[in-house]
Length: 279
Image (cartoon, rainbow, N blue to C red; front, side):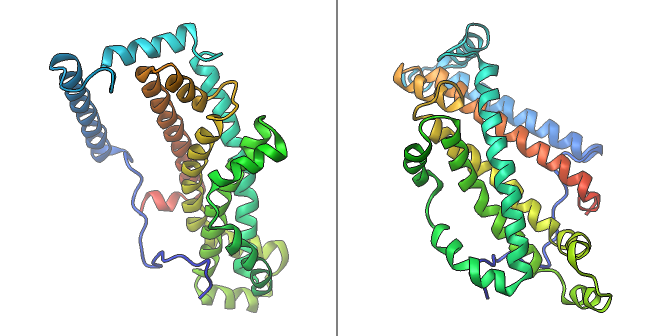
């Protein structure tokens, strides 16, 4: 078995999308709201009421609210909140789109052709264990402290999951499908469009859902070094200013942006493969 193949069982059925509508969706939303309210109440109790947790170590809800108002209205670290978010989202989206495009094509090609796999797999296996963050110094040397270096490390982070899952998706296509396509003389672009891509789509989207997580982690680390604006810059400046409330605002902003990107991918997946949301 190739080293690229993951251990995803072929018989596993994808779970229905959370909050998919009806009473189940309403219960999910209600449970989430109840859990969020409980966490907020506990947070307020431990910090503002009892002082069990020192505000110097973890900010109180009013302090975080004040920091959020400050960055939204007045700005912080060279920009206001929406400018920080927009800059980071643009960088992550650019790196993610380029990496996913190349990664999916390469994974499909390696899965479809033993020759391509034999040629590229050794190179991929050598580069794969290198953490994306390890590329930051080299990216700075090559491309400086600008956006190009950040996009490069995001590309590295998002590229690996796209390749692995696309490769696995092709290898999990049932053999009778390949035999039927060969009997019907399906070849060229039609072979990719009607056989490879549809058969590998579930696994491809699994890789696409994993890639943004790695992309956001890498971007925040890259923005800690030499960024004018961005969510990583909020965290960096907050640490320098010893401003825990603003650090928490930056962390929450990263979580919100990552969640929104995941939801967008889920929406695309449901449009491309509507049968999965009904599974």
